[in-house]
Image 1 (tube, rainbow, N blue to C red):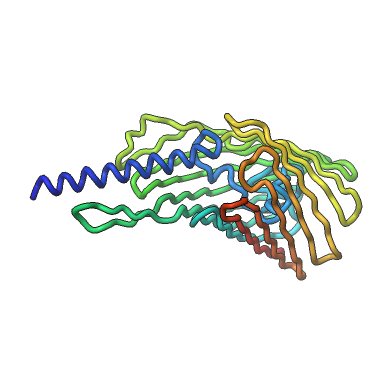
Image 2 (cartoon, rainbow, N blue to C red):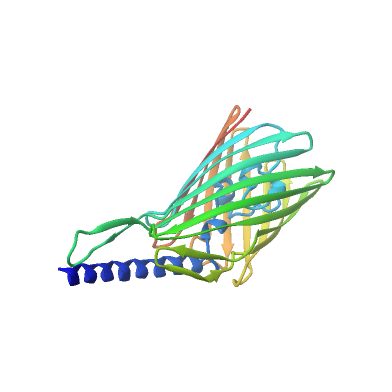
Length: 304
């Protein structure tokens, strides 16, 4: 009897280790570094335009592209839901508050990576959450005339298979310069120390570097209702990628967006639209994934 229990426990350890290895491989595949939630698109407005947002003043939508763009004359509350591949879901809730020439804000991000069922030969099956990540953002932006600056502090926690956990912090720094119809932006994201997964079956000795991102871009208002933009993005240990986006405003309420991302095997084509009614807005974006499931995003916002 005792040997069966030990055998079952060895099987449980083996299966959990296997899934953690696979999940960690997925996490690292986003940029050969850990914590893919730190490089995820969390704005339907940006997502519809191919994520060309480093030179935009997008309020809370800029929090994951360039903190200098977290700018608003009004208070904002924004919530976002994104369905990724398979059963991966992202959620975001944030608030910003203007103070003279500056803005302060807070945002919480959650990633739910679905569930995994472990089947054992001599005991009931077990269901575990594959991945659960949280990120708390504390952002501050300041206007210095034609230049806007911003800083975003991220406190994060990542859990794989309910067994091992990593936590730490990172900083984003950004600048945006605007002159007439042009806007130029640059940001360095995820500046911080290496992290390690600890607890359960993990030793904590192996460390993963954060997915450092350098992004820069420019946007130009072609005419009053049309603007185009380009972003150049370099994620650590990945090749440089180019993003293009176009946004057309039809009147005061309706906006259409298109984007294309060069250098990506998945979701290179994006599209979306936005609707504004008084102080409320709804934005939707879709990223086409070829033969795989497309990703869908929905953002709801209110200004007051």
